[in-house]
Length: 388
Ligand code: SF4
Image (cartoon, rainbow, N blue to C red; front, side, top):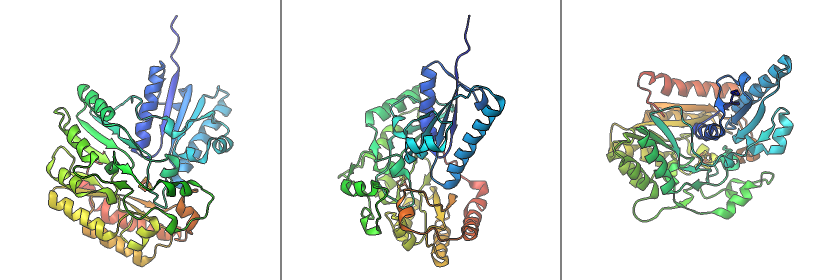
């Protein structure tokens, strides 16, 4: 007599890191003989892989769990096991179990190890994670708290995975990390991080890490450039992308490699967040508008075919009309082909949440959002590059 295999459903919110984590969680279920279903009402186990980057993302998680709760209460069917993971786990297991009574287990995000095999649906393009966590403390960002310090995966492990993907017929690879450019670089400034991890401590901008790269760059080729060369050297691999790059680690050797190595996608995603130096300083981003524009100029000099996309936050704490105009001016100069524009919402536990007022009214944020969306995304609808 054959028994029906147990079923799982994974709900993924947020960015490519979460998608990559979900692929590895799926592989774990597969190894245990479970099958994926595309309807959560039919699952024996539901994984909710959460995003905490904005309040809206957390609200969606609340909504989804509420729907599950209502459905199983109303139908009287046995409730599946609910496993909670992703960036919202930075709240701590105790708080999550208190917030969501239907959650059975909290899986810390760093336990979804990047060496676990992934179960991929796309058969041509694959995400390959090269690092996790982040050593930079942009004041608005929850990642250093939710994912912890940056850890680079070893060259051998990455290449084994890429070779195996090439053998399976994959031709496009996206190398994924919070700051891919710093992959394999030696880290600096650890003591300061301890202070910043103390979420209740009042801090000041002067307590933050120096507003520059957090890494020591070696003489000769930086490790990430060597990795790009190795991946693109495989005949089967036709296209390589990488996400995400930090402007303060977008060094000349990388620009040169992107310029001449045509297997690297001509689309470069380079988050700017703001075109105003005073806002960038409040965000603790490690660059100025001038240094950002200099990278863009060098990239376009290296190959005029290169197109640039970005992430921008509007309505960050204290953003004045004059500061916003500086962003408009930068946007016009760069001529971004795509932008992920977000209205600022403070994330509890972040430095900005501890230091600043969220003082830009919602209507102003919305108007600024519309201005940038029109200027970038609506203008380039027909030439929008494939981001991944
Ligand atoms: S570089 Fe800044 S925005 Fe990016 S993950 Fe790290 S802290 Fe967050």
